[in-house]
Image (cartoon, rainbow over all chains, first blue to last red; front, side, top):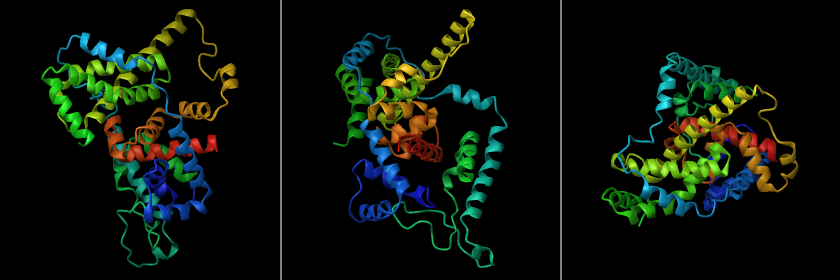
Length: 166
Length: 180
């Protein structure tokens, strides 16, 4: 993937869903016309949307019947995945390791996307936000990295590092 | 009226014992709940069972719904948790069965006969999705099939927006390599 293309992912997703038009759509089209990888990403996104699994016949009636015949007793919030809490409890080293890995990711992001001139002593403000449909990378070559990376798990950071190195 | 507001009104009525409101919630969301369960389990029958179980859990827990998330993301999170637990149960049973049989031969891996009939684009996409790591598969399908934002997908997965963003990116990259 070309440098900067990852920041078109949201726009490509919107385009695949038919939600992107106007100036943003034209800007994306101009990019996609010259970028084979983004063209392939868009084709994949559209293919996934066409491959939605069919819901079995009669499922709705079956579920309705089940919920009305159930015990109806109050239960703890089933949206809370307690197995995840216990897994984290078994890995007390995960949080400090994730913090260290995050620093490494952000550092790599800055170094890999910084132009040689940026090290010449000039003070360049890091970019902490980006406009997904706007120009990217920012002028000056500085990329602060996605500020949300700090919350990634160790496994996800490892995969991201592999991705950046490939 | 906005879909989220309609859902909240239905939850309030369902809490008060209104069966029609429960039916309306099932009608509105059973397809998405099924699709999430299917993406976790990869089997239509198991996904249908998990869909039923997820709604039974949700209805039992309606009193505890705080409204921090939308009804839709709350239900989809229950679906993901329920399906994941069901998947673990199936995996444990499979391990026990293998141990009992003293087997260990080709327990997993693509079935050559099935591979031979995977020809249509939809089948190719389904097969490629099935090969993704679960987090990538769910990030891709929640974004593209359910049209959730990164934040909503993170609520469903009990994850973070950053993690969903990375898993979505990696999932699309892998699908691109496989399908195009």
